[in-house]
Amino acid sequence: MTAIIIDDEPLARQGLEIILKNIPSLSLAGSFANAIEASIFLQHKNVDLIFLDINMPEMNGLDFVKSMVNKPLIIFVTAYPQYALESYELDAVDYLVKPIRLERLLKAMNKAESYLKLLAPSQEASVIDSVGHDYVFVKADRKFTKIFFKDILYIEGLKDYVVIKLANKKVITAMNIKTVAAQLPEKTFVRINKSFIVNMENIDAVDSFYVYIQDEEIPIGESFKSDFLTNYIVDKTIGRK
Image 1 (cartoon, rainbow, N blue to C red):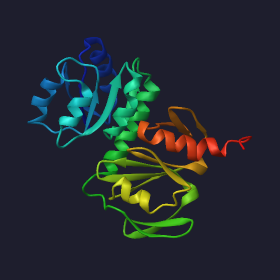
Image 2: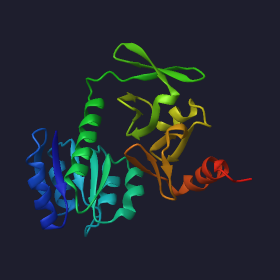
Image 3: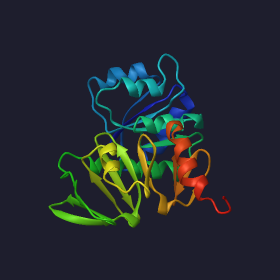
């Protein structure tokens, strides 16, 4: 997997370079102080992944991603956690807050590598073939796999695909997230932002900003928050009349 770094802070770039150069599965193709320099490089070279700062002069990281036509996978790396939700609206793979913990970086890398394999052109795209009252059949690898709704943790939109996250594996479908949402039972599966649908049965905790499922923190979108918290959380809280 090839990657570049875009960050206007020299020490942040150097620190990330040192870590990434020690990851055998990754080849660092360049490191840039701003989005303009990186954009010129990307006109001639393709990369699989960008580690991207957000708060930069001339063009910030969010605007840079919005300007791209063929986007690589994006991992935002920033000192500003308030941008997390908007980053997911742009189909970012992950969002790392500085100072970066090695454990958290490796988790983001593993996620990016997994998605890159799933999105490889040689990978046979799967499709949702039929839906039962408590399961769905997904066609992948020349066979139909039965997935029970209870086993789905969440569904993540990624470019023109969705990733169905189960406890022990991921299944990719060549469909957009809106189409998938329409085929699932709405009392069980709830869309909480532009890129995520969660299984209400598998939520571990909720606060005003995030849904927690196992070790994942999934941000709640502003346009989805009122409906989700009122209709799916507050009205089902013990003790309410």
